[in-house]
Length: 507
Image 1 (cartoon, helix red, strand yellow):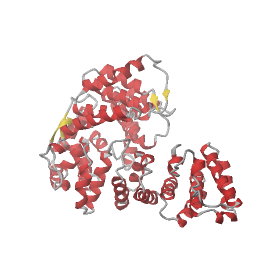
Image 2: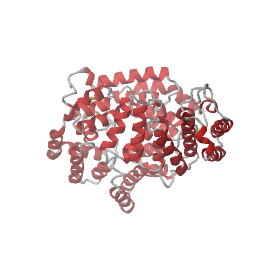
Image 3: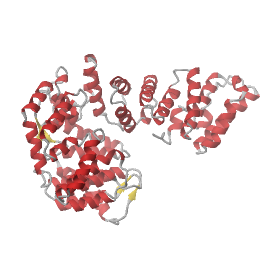
Image 4: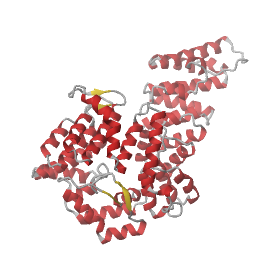
């Protein structure tokens, strides 16, 4: 994962007005001979070159300076800054071996330098060493909070996914983030804190649970906590504090205030629209997106719009479409979702929005339209490849094309890790109810998958199923009523009535 453009100033923790003047922190009363001053000036110039984007030129200077015998005459703090700056520049320029050499040298001199520890963690991400990266990032967080804003939720999600079989390292990383009061763009990452609480419960760290759960006020995560018996000592299900519907209202209010205070964070209105749909306040979603929809409507309907933040606009349009669908305005919903396809942070098609539109088209039993929507996507979708195969399975089943439908199904069943999010629905679609029950029961028994399984099983408010989903939704309800599934739930948790819509509003 590339480092952000602003990271040079952040990582070197510069106190003065420019990288060049502050990266080499030599006390004013420290006399320097001519050779030492020459090296200090050269490092300052190299940092300026790097900041201007000339990392190759900067690396040439660093190589010369750091190999100069006169470097020993430079004060220790200044040498340390030089090694860290060289490591940062090598990392930016993709020279991993040099970056590691410089950073290891810095750490050999001062093993508690948080800059070097943090940069080493980012390097280890690029080297695909997730365990080392997680431990380095956790160590840097234990040393300082200065890198909080440079750590993004995508990086954490990547590491947690790579470390799915290493709960101890995941717990170390999450605990370090928690202790540093890290937030995701100004809001509590409740999903991560619930993961931390789960790891703590499994590790027997009962004394930490109350503090962790105290920072969870997201309605979905509260549903997970109150439905899971592991948290019964901490979660008072009779208290308004743990009422998901009340939490949704609190969450909406908090997001509304945060969006006013930080209008540059376009993701905050997106989260608010999502929560409003959960509460069923469709009119509020329509109202908050009216001006956006009017602006988009006035634009060229065929033009692709690519700019930073466009994904957030696409999501607002998608949530508006969801509200329209819930209000019975299906044609308007499809038109709005079609508009969402045009907006993306990159030049490639917006994969998620295409998958959502195709999904609706399958739900309305318009398989050829759905396949046409999928046809514009690139050959490789990475994480979302499972979504394309799932929708192709539905489309070809509706078209009675058994050969291509079976091929899509076989891909999904043959890639259980990639298709984990949809495999239960694949089994329901194929009416393989015993296998579906076995898969659901296995998730209920798995310590770290249990929470999401319990969330999916709660009794939510629902909408009528669309025709393409009706049979599968009915099979889901039958699955919930099976004696073996109910027994598995009873052993670890409970199913309650929740006065909210779930992630699938027809279940």
